[in-house]
Length: 496
Length: 123
Image (cartoon, rainbow over all chains, first blue to last red; front, side):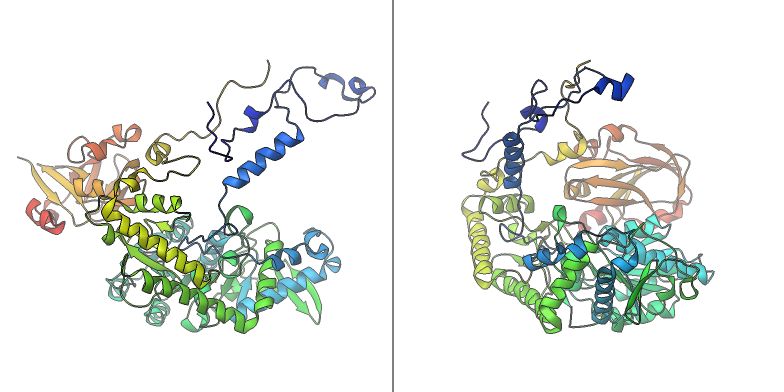
């Protein structure tokens, strides 16, 4: 059956497009092949589908047309920060001295790359007000792991590994408790209050002699600034613990405050969120971690050092100032291509520009909050930071749920926002416009959402039927989770 | 005689002598949406009241289940491994999670009656 929709093709798998009896390449005959490979010579089919060049190109181009990205339109995923990736970054990352190097080549031949690592390190320390930075973590989640490993190492150094409890607010990203649990800590949840902030008295009540530390996202996933952060850090340190900050939302406060001034001990920085490196499949990720002077000596190797203009890699933890390092986190030195892109972003914006990025991101979110308040229900009163959280109160008695509303947005040409996260808000819709969007773009988005809300009263059935214009309509997500089909199955192509 | 008690986290426990059967309420199963995975405790393990003992995963979220009473688990509902949807279909009966030997029946005073629970969820 033809499942094409107009010029949007129903794409088959390469196995289905190709044919084992066909070949798309024309190889020269090799003389004496049987003598060269001896007993390994076989004339059986190898079972790979033969594909011509146009078939292969069409397959991948069609797939790419099904992909949605920030290059195609507004991508308002809250807590994910889908922002524009400037093309200047790409040009810089393709410079030979950065793109054609190998982690094992002599360091005298890659001084420029090491200088860039040193430069981005100093910018990150300056922007965060922290004592040290490691560039090696391969993504935000590994950055979290790295920061918490340094905390564990510090507790080991104090001979206080009995401190096993890590406190995590109920609005946290799921990776926070997962990281703590992975390292053998016991995770305890602290509650949010009715303002969407950490309930300080619940935090206080959960501190005892087993307290190792607390993991806080600030601004938090409700898009709000944790105003008790200094009180929390003071009590944390007084109680012998450490304060880890999930830096996922650092993009809201760059140039406005320094995490070091808040008493934070370790924080990862998602270069894709804050410094515009590609996100998702365009990655890879990169999650440098900054450390306070309390944790500096425990951070991992290797480190780049500037010895009077000569850049060296300190890899040996027997060196005096690295003697307490928890060791090596990754085989090599991190995601060089991402460092170049992030550095390009920082230098092209400058200190004042980076500050304005944060201000514009917060302004855009608040413009959405103010403009949508008449139709949607903000979860909390007052200003938000870089993302605005709505509850599903505006859907009450319509029979339409958050998921249906999100699906209907697709038919209107918008990728939905983050839904059902954070868990503390019923039917949550979390919108992060980022600084990328113009007022015109935001106005169009606002009008579309308001029109959808108006339609709730007249035609709620259409929400249940959405999306209509996508290649595949409503997916059976329950069945997909209960009985996942994890690989392509049909008759194997291998001829026996 | 069987008594039923509720927690503020939407678990129920049916008490018969020293034995208790634990599950989640209809309200909780509706809020979670379609349940796709259940992680149950091991038989023979002991838990304190209020400790997280199991995890229920739905299409929307993964939620922890807190034990309504302290004691030792002596049976778990193994049919949930293959068919977690039983919790959605029948949360108060065949969708039970585990059975526990109740260590201290005085603790049940910390729980809610059916009437109090209905008030909590505004039913």
